[in-house]
Structure formats: C-alpha cells, structure tokens
View 1 (spheres, rainbow, N blue to C red):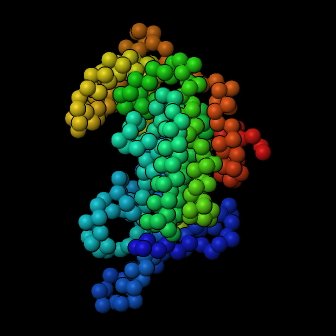
View 2: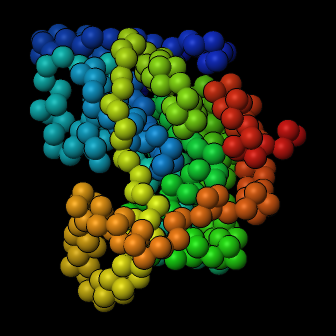
View 3: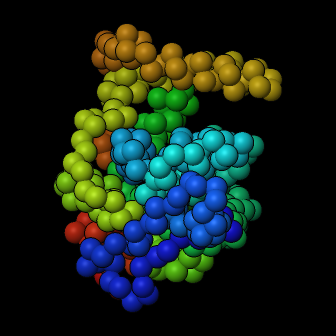
Length: 355
C-alpha cells in the first residue's frame, strides 16, 4: 500500500496522552537518493481518516486541518489530494506531518442514490426491516473497504449525545430545504427514532472499526468536550496526529438557524420541495442546491425569522423527543463508548446504563 503508517507501540495507553503516531520521517526529494525513494515507497506519513458523525464537530475539525500547514487535507479529497492526478504535483516540496481524509458520509446508512441525501443522514420516515439490514450492512462494508485500502490508517470518530445530535441533524435538514414537519409531531418523533438508532448505534460502529484496525488505532472524541473545553479538545487532536500544539479558535462555525426561522422554513419547503422533486435528473440536484443556498442568505434567513415570529409559528420543540422515547430508542448504544475517558464525563448525554 502507499500509506504504510508507523504507529506507536502496542500496549501504550492512549489515555496517558502518548502520541498515536510516531514522528514521520522527513523524506528527501532528491531523485538520486535511493534510500529516500525506498522510504517514500513505504509511505512514512501517517494517515488519519475521519468517518463521522455529522453535527458532532466535523466542521470545526476540518477548519482545524485547514489552519495547519503541516496537515495535508483537501475537502472531498483523500489524504490531502483533491484528485489522483494531483499526486505527482503534491509530492514536490516539504512533506506534511499528517495526511487527513474526512467525510461524514463514510458512516452513512443509505446510499447516495437512495432516499436520503448525499451524507446518508436518516430521514424522519420509520425504516423498513430491509432498510435496517441494508443500512447496517453498508456501514460494515464501508469499514471493510477502508481497511482493505488503508490497513494501517488511524480512524477518528466524532460523536455527540443523542438528543443534541438528532436536534442538530433535523435543524440542518430544514436549513437545507427539507420540510421535516414530523419534528413537530410527538408520535412521529417516536417512529423517526428507529431510523436514527440504526444510524447512531455508536458501540456497534466503533466495534466494527476496532475489529478492522485495532483498538489502538481508533480515537473517539465527543462533541461535548469541544463545547466545554476547547483547549483540551485541540490538544487531543494534536496528540492524535503527533503534531505540536497550537491554540485554535475559529469562533462560531456552522451557526444554527433561529427557532422561528426553522418553523417558517419548514412551511415554505413544504410548498417548494414537491415542486423541486418533480425536476428530473441532474437538474433536480442543481435546483435543490440553489434553493438551499438561497435559504442560507442572511437577508432571506432574517426574513424567515421575522415571518415565523409574526405568524407565531411554533419553534422546533425543545427537547425534540421525550426522555422516555429517547431512552427506549438509544439505551445500550453507547455503554462501551462511555468507558472511554474523554466521553465518561458526559455519560448521561449518551444514556449509558452502567452495565
């Protein structure tokens, strides 16, 4: 493989702050240096693959990667390369300390061509048993394929407490022009949780990657740590990649839409979306993207917020689902997860049973 990363010795406790990766060798670009060419062929630069979850700090993580000159990262690319044709050009000059690939779609449960958007986020529709089986199989097959392609990569999984994650996912879909009207119906909420459980069975997904890559190569960071202790979170990211610590605070990223604006947008999208869905082929995707971009324009968003307030539209319920429904849906999905030292302080948000 072209990505033969050097990892820390087995048995090192990741909770002790030890570096996950050994320091990468600096590779000479002298074409006559045969030893360097051999090192380059073995791939001395560590590769970190971020697989998800959405709404769990992914926007922050990508901004952090882009802020560092010692990280090779390109959005929608792989290992810092936007396209495979770029590799001959990208190897010229100083080599990075870390290569990063990042896509929340890697943990998705629905295909790009299925009934969910590109990211594979769940919809508000209760899934059929065949869909449940296919979704779990898709997650397992994605993990297996990544292990075949990059067997010595390190995996980063960003997670978030269930209620907060679902609420943020729903709000994001509304911002993207999806009329999530079910979110205002308590009975529909309970049904929708079946879809979200399939997507957010953290223990199962983490177990897949630990089995494929080894526990020492899987790092899990909770959104709540980013929320409560930015400095500690950034320090942990630096340790994961064996990079020197540098403070990083981009300010608020991916800001949420006000509650009344979400309600007004839902009403608008309930009218617009059926029209867009009748547009065939690639034009449908283009029209949907254009509509989503329109909703993101500041004056439009403020107008929607004002419309929602004047019309006394009901904001998105808070909490979105009852504690009983949430417990019934997700209890047991994070019992192993909360044993990790970074997640343990937030066990209540992950509905850990203590078993």
